[in-house]
Image 1 (cartoon, rainbow over the protein chains, first blue to last red):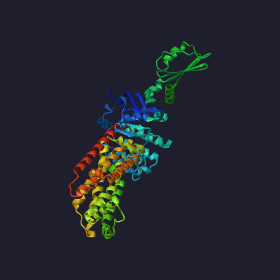
Image 2: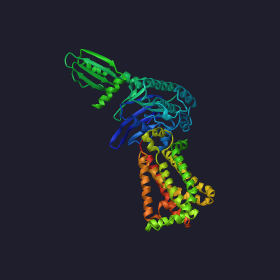
Image 3: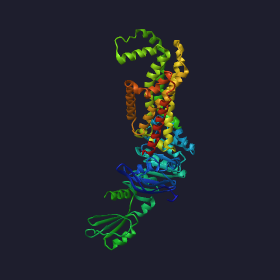
Image 4: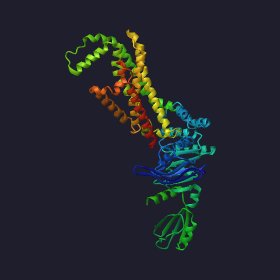
Length: 300
Length: 255
């Protein structure tokens, strides 16, 4: 496994009894990227993250963070020393005050960023004397984010960081994240089922479904390469077997044949000419469409 | 700071235990003059068998202050209350936190599970040590107020017996808390086990000479037969084994 990838998994599997939550996950997250980990609820996002952080043991396969094996207890402590984390439940210690929670967390991280702590306490308007259990869910999320951002971490793993937040609060949190990345050198790996927020801040995307990565790549490349080619025929659309690589899906409806390609439109257009369509149109594909199409393919 | 977290999580159970045990120790001392006044009225004439024997034995023990303290405090009130708080302090921890939330944050810290568990166990045992010694040391301090004397050495020995043998209940609750994700099942299971043990020691005197509660009360020492070394050693070893098993269990858990 190469070192330029901060996170790397190879045929990673995790089962809970008879239930296989992660089924041969192959992930590669390059250093310095903001990688959105997109999938439906129950797709295996949280389980994968738990395995990466040593909270759950892999059933088989390999997973490395910073080149360290996640199933080695000593390496796992080192991984967590260099990683900031926000869990999907955002549950912290209700009996502590905000101030105590910050001091408690800071004590474990030698590179704790006091400057960022002050900045985010002010920016998020967190009352230092208030007990965590008395905070609203939005404030709790902000505190969890502060505790992750100030660790001086090289990697941030955020599990559904904006779940249970209203749109205004979501926007606040995303902006804070983008501003943080702009000023710090770090890698962000964040899971979400909100396509819009991945689209807004990620530069790489991993789409997973039923415990496996079905699409992986730079967001720009995906936008560049995914194309919808629509062919209209005089009569009933034919049912050709395209040989071009990267054909993700082919639909026939009456006179219209639609092809979804993940490797551009050229190969499909070349083959389609032989079918003599009346018209041919190449359309760009949004991340939402890519997500819905690839997940839908898996469902069939 | 893990120590601080453990303290915050257990402080109320500990403080309540300390206050109750201290009140109980104080009242045990202060009511002794009344007990002495009532002794001539004790009669076993209308009783027979085991019951008569026990009443007579209690009255006999109460005639001497050292015996009274042992039978009324170390062998009764303290033993029961301390056991209850040992079980209460043993429950909870990482698995219980995972049910109520917060465990994922703890597990994201750069700390091994062994250290998390070790700090939690050490905090609980330190609190139990205080619960064993502080209320009992009140007895030699308060005894002069009623014109009596009780040796500090006796109080220390009985407290040490209570702690070393009784830590078995703490460790069992601690171990079960790595098996069950709620606090109630470990609590109920260990309390039921303690009640069964106490009843069996009460009804089978031959067996009770090896019983855990008898070692906890330091009966052998009280009767002048020296310290119950074997019982203390066995209790400590059993406790250590259960804490070790808990660490092995928590290391394998998926959260």
